[in-house]
Length: 447
Image 1 (spheres, rainbow, N blue to C red):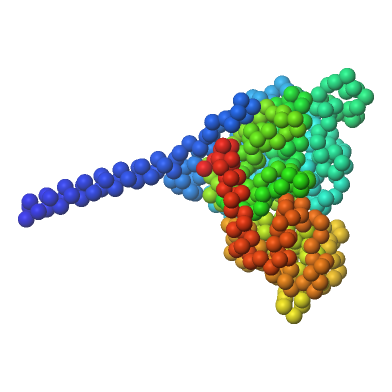
Image 2 (cartoon, rainbow, N blue to C red):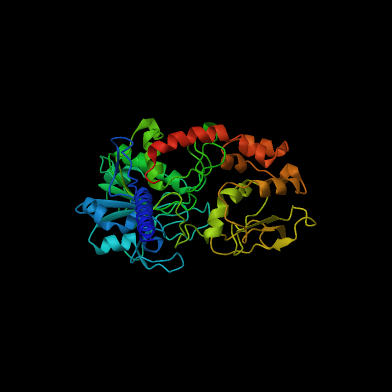
């Protein structure tokens, strides 16, 4: 009996040791340092993006801007330019749940308080405070709080002018009143990981201007809320525009920092110039990490649901169907007076509001669908677009020319008009998507 008890005790000890060994191995694999080698001599990554999933409650995502110790030494004693908007903030303390409110200070205000010499702020679409309509002209001005000149990078002037970055022979004549040249540029915008969201187009032009002026660029990276998948047609060069500049799919699965490395590495800047780039990566982040944006990135993406549906519903912007601008559920509903009301039971009437001063079909009854309670998407969903086309009162006026710019190809419109199924359409993307994924791997910072 005693012998049997001894044997059982030894067996239990051995099994426990094996079990602990396997757990340690799993834990180590979760702690993998996700830093990648520089894609080229022009790219640098400071710090790391270490992911440790041992205790999720303690794993606070630290965006690049939070890690001031990594980039303040690069800014001290320099004349600084910043590309920023309302999302460019430093979070003051960690939180333990996604539901907990965030307390923050704007990056510009923080750097000014630390005596960093900010000479210019460059504002993308929607402006420095993020209240302008989509496509609205943003004018130059001054920040009322700090007095720093604000230069618009939307409208006719999408690329920073050389005379606003670097002192030249024409500097005194060309420079705006109160604007000084800069030594270094900082880029900090919250992107949503979708090709037609214009912040990555602004990134392209800022990188190009910095390369031409020989000014280094620091990117304070932030998570991609749609970073867990890659989908959609690849943009064809002949359909390049500000809503799609590069041969990438609609959903590219990269952060701003990773995407900047791809722009450099693939030589997409004019004349193949390269930007001297430094990325401050997000800490405790992987592409599979759910990230709820604490600040809406633009007026018509008010919440997680809108951001998740945006890659699928934005195609409607190239049709005669509203995506809910002028309602409280932007990019969570769609509808039109030109859809069959006998088929669609949901109704809404767009009215002017923040981010939609003159919404499509203002004051008119629209028939469509409310998607605000749908499950989260992890791929582009074309069924609503195809369904709306098939139930349009007049198919001849359903699409407009903007649709091809959004899709990046004429094929998608043709496929829908020809009656192809969603499965047939998405299958036609796969070869190009696989090729893109192979290229993308070279520039990833995170798992």
